[in-house]
Image 1 (spheres, rainbow, N blue to C red):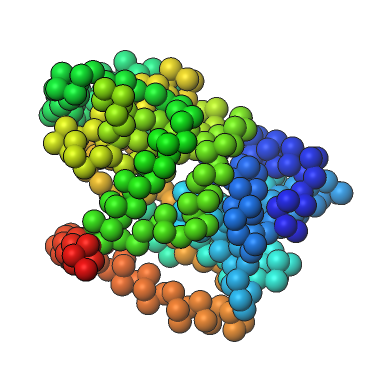
Image 2 (image 1 turned 45 degrees about the horizontal axis):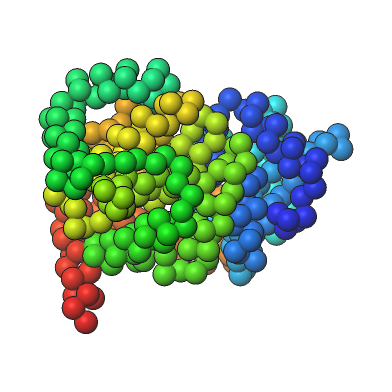
Length: 354
């Protein structure tokens, strides 16, 4: 069915099954995220599995041509999979057939999703920051794990405060101008580094603005902003549950780059999140120096596809697998990866010069 057709009882069953699963309370797995995607994507669907007349599982997805399906919000969702009672026995092929899908593709499949494990082609670490014992405990550990990073970042924070006339951090900013500023910075960052501008895609920019007004206990939009003399210098938009802050879109004003305001922002976010009862900041997959410095651990996420025989599956293999294998080949070789990164940045400079 379309997500908007779920009734109140089904939505409550979804939340209840998820809460009892024992998995981290990732906001991307809550019905509110699927409902938000349905607001901007007509292809959004949810499969509801019943057992003894009661909802027992929910699989959100997007349906394309030839029965080719993708995880809901594919490309921007950082946690994907089925929400199901742990004792429920399902067959992936039968589920796809019932959904009229030949393929269900994922790029951030949650760990423990055994139903789709056979279709995983690669695993990647998603970096996490554990602040469950409080910020002071996290900071003490950070000083041991990454002493140079901590000293340098806090020194830059103090210098920025002195030279800019004071700093102010807002964990949950509601000023829409700050969100617009963040999206402008992020678009420029994508272009500067040679990557596709996500916010140039209308559905993504609309989705973020929609989620900024979502305030459910399991999935709420959170805009965090670091101000210098009331001027925003770094910002982040993500989603939170009661215990998890899923970090999504961070960026900063390049004019203040020498002060590393993005790193300062992440430290203040960790402090505020701990104070708000959040136990984990999920920084997501994708290698980055700041993630290595901030992290306390890693959890695996998977990329791949569940398939059943048919033309759609064949088209998926022809269109997707060569690219996936090429990317995996480059990522596994640091020198090639560094060359690819330089090439992307050069392409970005060329585009800006046009």
